[in-house]
Image (cartoon, rainbow, N blue to C red; front, side):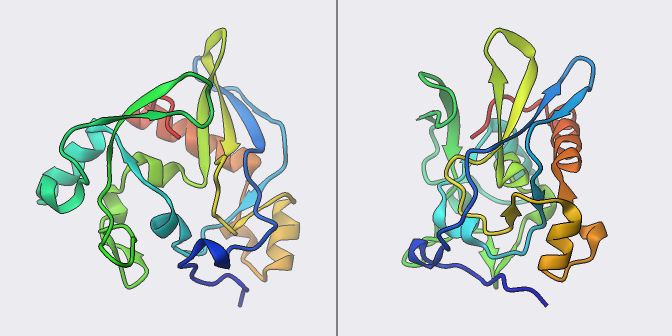
Length: 198
């Protein structure tokens, strides 16, 4: 079908990973979307993001996971929040809790048989990934959507949806292009009142 495989170590990542590329701008007040670069994406469940990243949680993420029956000690590395230096906005810090990793494998505690046990209510950072958002300086109504600056996702490609579908033998209706990515993230921001998350 396609050539995407489960990735368990940073050494297994291909050299052509796309990262830190601006996809487009969303005007949060008007809903206008402006595509900057054509990117195509479809999650292939390589689980590299679940294994190779530290996953930040918002307070809403923590409450949502607790509401589904999990205790803090089961999924938080520490019960106190930390300040994380932004990789996107110089001098900016984000208050977050850190998702616990399994000992030895260093994978997310909710990853089981390469599937997310909490997929239906997973953290906002996981919903956004492999993308990040940043507020534009000087205009609070606008956010820029980028490919995560430390992406480990092999499923993001700089090409059209049609080219992506043909190259990887995908159903064209399952592939997201830049416009669909911007629409998805705009809806996510509206639903969750997302702030800058990276």
